[in-house]
Length: 99
Image (cartoon, rainbow, N blue to C red; front, side, top):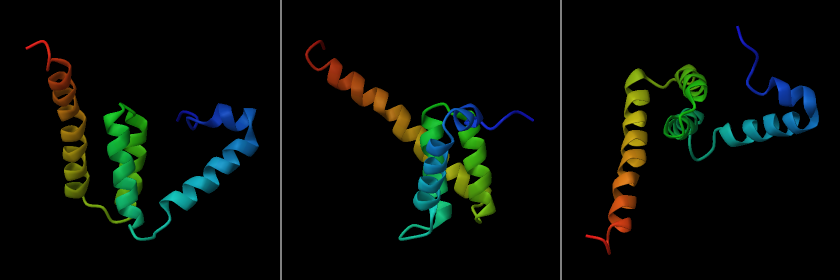
């Protein structure tokens, strides 16, 4: 099994990684949104940015919090739509004066 993706930074700056971990716990804590939804949101961001390891880890964590396979799939549909449709909006704006 490979090292955690931040293991090098943890060795380089353990204080920063401790801060990052505390922030993560704060961000993903249940609040107005349940932890499961926050993890699904983060998974969508990682999918849109090509972070395969993040998608895997966040989907796994969301399912541990009770997310179903269907919820993961629907979240990824939204990520796909918002990521893909952005290309159409960008192109439309860029071509406004050309076409």
